[in-house]
Each structure stands twice: as C-alpha cells, then as structure tokens.
Amino acid sequence: MFTRLTLVLALFVSLLAEAGPPKKRPSEAERKAFAHALSLGRKAAKAKDYAGALAALEAALKLSPRSPSVLGELGWAHFNAGQLDKAAAHTESAIDTASRAKQLGALHYNRGRILEAQGKKEEARVAYTESLGLRANETVRKRVDGLGGPLVRSTTAAAAATADKAAVEVVSYYCESCDGTADEGCTCGGAPTEIGEGGIESFEVVHIEGSGEPGGSVDTHVLVVGHGGRFFGMGVVADGYTPGVAYIYNSGSVDAVRVEDLLPELPGKELVIEATNGTVDHDPGVESTSSDEKKTWMICGLAKGRPTCATLTRAVDWSNNELGPDWEVGKELDSGKWSLDVSVSGGKISVALGKGTREGDLPPATQACLGTFTFAGLSERACVDTVVAE
Image (cartoon, rainbow, N blue to C red; front, side, top):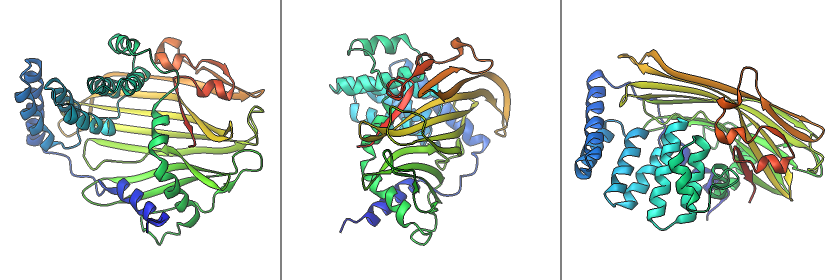
C-alpha cells in the first residue's frame, strides 16, 4: 500500500542517496591527473575531436564524479557528437551540482540548445530564460528571441513546484508525525504554526537532517504551508546539502520568520522569511575556488485562492580566488557584492538599492525589481522566484 509513510521514506532516501561523511581531499597527484584529463578533453573538443574529448572527459569524471565542470563539458561534447540523450543527462547532472551563477547560466543555455535539438522549443525557451536570469549574454538573448522572447516570470521555482507534487504529502507527514523515532536523521519543529483566518492557515519550516553512504550530508529547511485541509511544499528555504565530494560545501540558515498583516490586497496575514545560503566550490580543473553568500527575502500569502510565495535575492557577496596546493584560498582573482533594501509600507513592497550599491552592480534581471509593487506585480518579475501551490 502506497502510504504517506512510504512517501516520507522515499523523500528521505532521495535526499540521502549521496550522503555520508565528506570524502578526504584528493592528493596532489590526483588533482594533477584530473586537471590533465580535463585539459585534454577541452583541447580535443576545441579541435572537434569529440571521440577524443569524450574519452578524456570520462577519465576526468572518474577522478571527480560530481564535478559540474566535467559534467557540463561532457554534456556539450555529447551534444556536438549528436548524442542528445547523453547530452541531456550529463547537463542535468551538472546543473544539479553547480553553484556559481555564471556557470549555471552557461549550463542552462546548453540545456536549451539540447532541448531545441530535441524539438522541445517551449522547454528550450524556459531554459534560455533561466540562463538570462543568471547572467546577461547576447548569444542567449538572440536564441530565446527566436522562440518568442524570454518568459516574464522566473521559471526555476515554478518548475520545482510542479516537480514537487509528490513531496507535498511527504513533508506534511513530517509536520504532523515526525517524532524523531521514524528516522534518526529527522528533526521537526512540532505542529504547524497557526496563522489565523482568511489567508494561509498554518505553516512549518521543516528541518530535514541526516547522512549516509556513499558520502555527503543533508541539513535542509523546507517551507510547508497549510490551507483548506491540505499541506503544500513551497520549496527549500535554506540549503545545507553537501554532495559527498571535497569540492563543494553548502551552508544555509533561516535568519527570521515573521507573520504580519502587510498586504491588504491579500486575505489574512502574510508570512515573511529571511534566510542566508552560502557555497564554497573548489574547481581543481581551473585551479580556482569560488565562494558566495546570498541573502533572500520571501513573502507568502493567499493569492487567487492559492498559497503563493515570492522570493527575492536581496544581497550577494562573492569572490573567486586561486586554489593553493593544500586547498587554501590563494590570491583573489575577482569579487563583487551588491544589496537591496526591501520594505513593506502602505500595502506595497518597495525594492531599492542597498547602501554602497549602484544600479550597474545588479544583474539585468534584478534591475527590473527596483521600484514599488503590489504582491502580484512583484511575483511576476523575472528576478523573483515564485511558487504557486498546485
């Protein structure tokens, strides 16, 4: 019988499928072998020797099975070799493990090209929109213009909401029933917090934590809201997932949770969550290490009868450094930071430049979020991830 407990266990197993203690850092010899194989693969791909590129990149992948650089370049080599299914699989894996915005922008463009070649033009349009939301690029712009132009609203969270339907009941089980005995790795904050009448009825920030083989750890907070006798998964708020390799470390924390009646256009009260997510990504293929810290501002309410959450990145601080022989942070290559001031007054959401930030510091999509908006207006901006309960 396919029960809610079965769903719970399925979600937890999927989260821990690659869990366990982080592996030791590779030796200098392993790093050199990896960098050499990656260099050979890139040279072969540039020379359009795709068979040679695939062989070299597969060798690099064995040394670093979850390197987004290798997975992405393997996907692109398969694409150029006309092997679309393999290209799609490797590119999706690269997107799952990548953390840097610039790299993710390139990977979503690659994904769009693959989808176009498969005849999936509307899905390709979504991928190109994702790419433009992460970085400005004229090549991507021309490509998506040929398919009708970029989508107005963000697609990442919308796609996640669609894919997350099965997890809705899973997470609601944690909210109602997790007592620390069903799975030793699970912790839960107790019963959902009641908000009041008229709008979203309750919410819970569910804490899922654990580890297992073959490597990695999970320490993630997921937002669940209750309405009309049902629970809805609204996505990850703070992500502490570390994927079992020495190259990538994530850390996330929930900084503030408030319930207030802020927006007259929405019934009942609204939920506001502030969170911080950080990533460190060592890339021995290019001998560099990047890190970033992002602060997000999320507001959730009942819009058109459905729980809806809009999330805006309100601060970014990133750097890229040389990677030292013992994986210490070396000379700074480049860095940057920007911030937004977000406030709610008179039933409207205002987004302004933060202290020391110039408009040109912001990604193009984020520049479109400067101004004063209704909830509906903000949730439709391309710089905002919006989740609507299905």
